[in-house]
Amino acid sequence: MRDVGLYLIKLPRSFYVFCAATLVVVLFWGGSQPFAAGLFPVPYDKIAHSLYFGTLSLLFWLGTGGRWPVLLFVAVSAIGGLDELHQATLPGRVADIYDFMFDTAAAGLIIVALEWNKFSLNEIQRRMNKT
Image 1 (cartoon, rainbow, N blue to C red):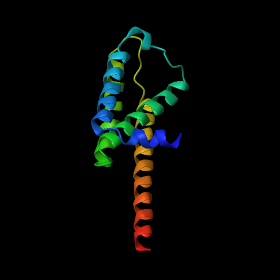
Image 2 (cartoon, one colour; image 1 turned 90 degrees about the vertical axis):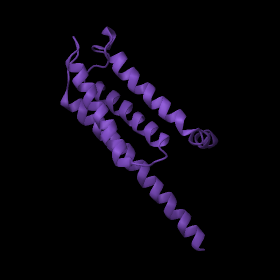
Image 3 (cartoon, one colour; image 1 turned 180 degrees about the vertical axis):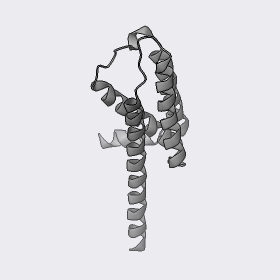
């Protein structure tokens, strides 16, 4: 099972960027469809927002090779804000500041965890090379 995870990380970066871009398109296109109103009831909508934007952050981070983490955080947070503004214009949808906060928190948590892991792995490699 561990080999599957290692294989996924070795995919081309363009694959991850494509997947992230697809998620963004689906977010705005799917969010404007009539079935999207009430798709996730409260409080499960917060879980859905967290998972969606956490996944989006992960895909963008893998797609950029872990470069520009602050820019990635700002970009994913901006996508969350634009999504809420988009929802405000749609019938049956409601823009919610708490949804935006969960989007931003999920993006931040995932990016910090990935950066911390990258730092830890680099530190382990440095220590191993000294011995």
